[in-house]
Image (cartoon, rainbow, N blue to C red; front, side, top):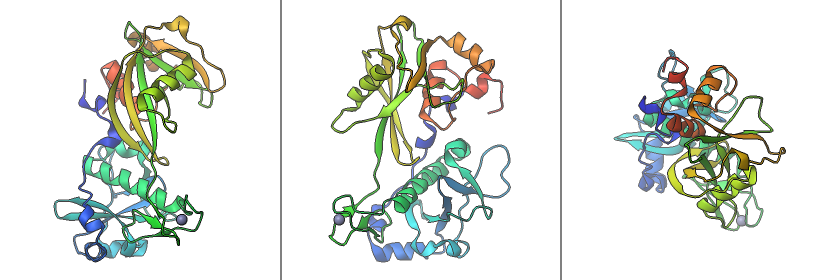
Length: 308
Ligand SMILES: [Zn+2]
């Protein structure tokens, strides 16, 4: 088994967010105009990658201040630092065709760890900058403040990037079969672990149990926290769990509206159906893929005999 089956792809990497610089307008301006500053180029859910990308690892493009000046480097949002290098993100929406943009949900598994952390933060904070236009307290228009990480309205209310917590869970029966479901909105053959948003006033554990019961009528007993990763499409934080139930296949009941089909797969059944192309799995950057591959004990690519 290769290690890649065990980590949460978008949770890899660490960048010092360096709040001291971020919160100091003159330090921040100095950091932006420094020779060593590096700028990511972002468009929607995509980041530009360096030219000459082969089939293996992809490098996220990081321009110097001169090359990035066309893309608003003077007010680029500060992502943080590694050592003495400080990184910023420029919103270059509309610059398609000028860069090799890659949607991070499809490509970030080929980025190195630091590039992943930078790209995920860049996409998340710029999505918030674009969409948070009005104060949620009084409805007045919001103005971006110098940090890039907060906005203020004329009545002094401050807004920060919002995150929507969502739970996602691998539920196992007593024989270690895995519960997978097919949403009615998905194409044929696409299966995944169950997931859903946490409701107001709800604990994560209650959300896991509620979602599994609503979608399949399966009660969950023991739960263990697995890990988390940002999913900024547009603003989720995925909180992953593993859970166990005494229920069996006969207890599954789906509503046919949201959930078309749910089934406890054995490993051998899952393998043969995936190889036959009868079922399809979610993107390799997703928590769902990591949870399923962890249960399986190998990566999908390895199982399908593909190059990793
Ligand atoms: Zn306000």
